[in-house]
Image 1 (cartoon, rainbow, N blue to C red):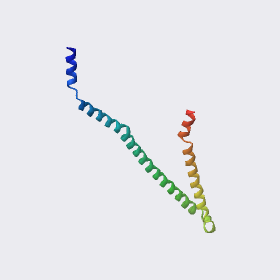
Image 2: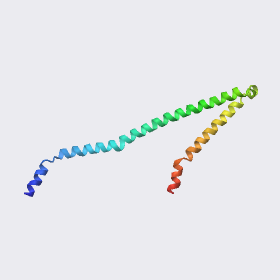
Image 3: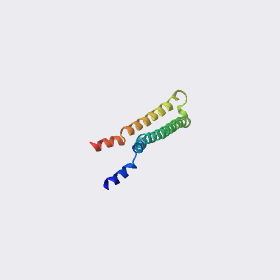
Image 4: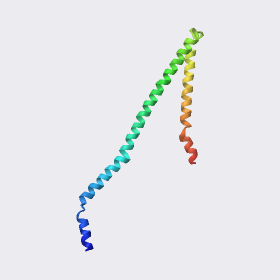
Length: 117
């Protein structure tokens, strides 16, 4: 009698159905573990790139504004000293670049390395 109940249970099982279910599980796993993270990474990169471009344009406009302010506010810098505002703005730009590079180099990744050691 116990044998008959197992046969009844196995009779309803189909090898094709099991393989189809296994294939569906594998496809769902691949989508969850590869496709979704790649899409999320693409979205992260797109927004990060767009934000960096906007910040870059903002810095350029601020530097141009600083140049125009120096040229307008200090008429002494006309004539033979007209290159001086450009030098000051270039130095300011280098300072901003240096500060940005310093913050990137001493960011959270470096702090994490100290914690794990």
